Image (cartoon, rainbow, N blue to C red; front, side, top):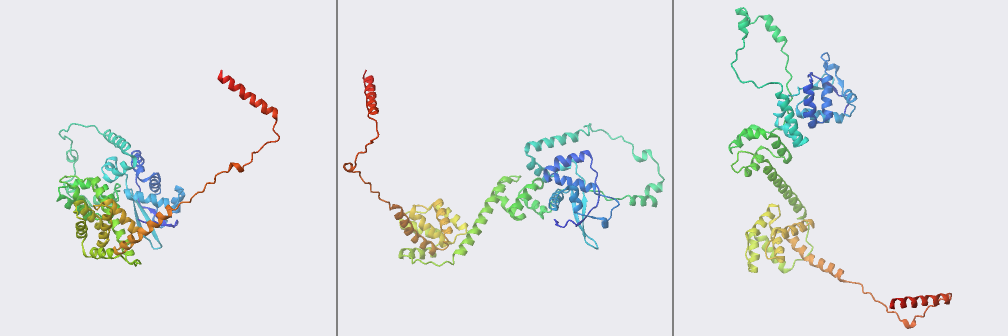
Length: 447
């Protein structure tokens, strides 16, 4: 894949292709949803820029395409790469005496039958336009293809042959003359191939087909699902054997690939692998941190046992002290913690702390505490024990600060010291009228 920011970079169109109305319809209706309108415009521009009289030394700069399409170089190369991917254009870098020249080889637009026979193109088209529009396009072009021929019952071929009609000298029929051979050679012009998807994935399909054949998967199944397989392998960065290994648990004796289940397994495997690497990096970074707290005698004894025993042995040791027993689900939790890349002694102290809160080792609590420790730079058993010794003091201090409340002292009013306020400006006649109105309202309510 080539790209340059130099508008003076020379380019040359090596050949021409004919664009018929049917060809343009395939370009616009089938290819344009895949590559975009600008890519289709670039393809047509290259077609019309071919000149049979032009030689390499007459090459123009890319700025000529910029002027014709009214866009930047970045957009031109983005469109060109899409055309290369679907096989409509091949780009060659030709070294000239003065500089390198981009030679664009144009390929014919395939028929609708060839397009729909290419699984990668049809899968991408369905993803781009949706199921309903994809069905309509398929039916439209299928109906159009059938209109060019009428189904006729197969009969006996009674056509005349060449020698039934024409006569040639015996020598000429067996060995053509020199003039005929020269004319044939002069007219041997390389055919322009139809566009084909430029996969260049580096995937060894023959190897995959041979390996899957051992598990009764037909090679045609691999061929039909190439697009999905390429997408998954590129998404998760895996090779052929890794894809096969991830696929095996999903087969169950079936002859088809369950791509939905394969995708789910790959996603889980990818997440677990990345999570494990991240945890291991965090642990390595924090293991060097020194512990500033002196451990209690009880915790020193626990630390000694945690360093001696495996997670299963340590769990049994703790349970036997309490009079309980280990369960299969607890061992499953231990396996999960170890598979995440946590050190053995770290897991043992984690088990010890979990059993201080609950009678069994529960996955939710274990993951919650483990996340808390990792986020607080705890990576070893000694650091974990020092952390939990500091933790109660912090909790007690926070609780004590929340328990301190401000006492409010409410002062009572001594009414004997409060003097009544009188308004010297009040009108006595207004007061007399006010009381009379009150008496009248009381009398009316009694009646």
